Image (cartoon, rainbow, N blue to C red):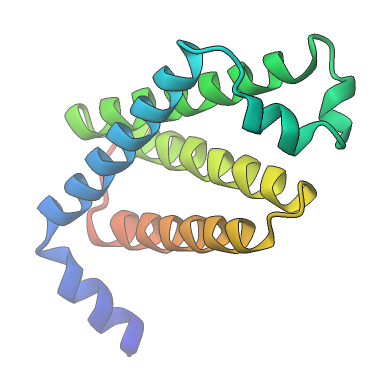
Amino acid sequence: MFKERLVQAWSSNLFAFKLFRAFLAFTFLHAGVEKLTQETPDWFVERFSSTFFIHFPGGLGVTFHLLGAMESLAGLLMAVSVVFPSRFRVRISYLACLTVFFALGFGSRISHQFSEAGMLFNYFALTLILQTLDERAHPITV
């Protein structure tokens, strides 16, 4: 009963879901492009120098820029799903954002930044809940 009422309340707010997707698109595009256009910062090297990421080919620089590429791709996919919505695009864009939140949370966890990891888990959970509500309230054909 509660679930149906919640979906019904949000079903008239297509704009709210598009706004949330646009916010995710902007956030990830901005963060990703910023990471791709700068050198690996000292804080990143300091935070992850004691983790297994240091042993990746290319070291922490590649890891940092790979994270930037993931964020940029998630933002781009989300922007496309706002402008050209389809069931496939919306699902893939949410999946990309959830993957980035998971990667960021995992990195925070292994670098012993527990409060940051907890915060990213909350972002992950909120995005997953909103994805579910978005898909149930606004079924998009094909």
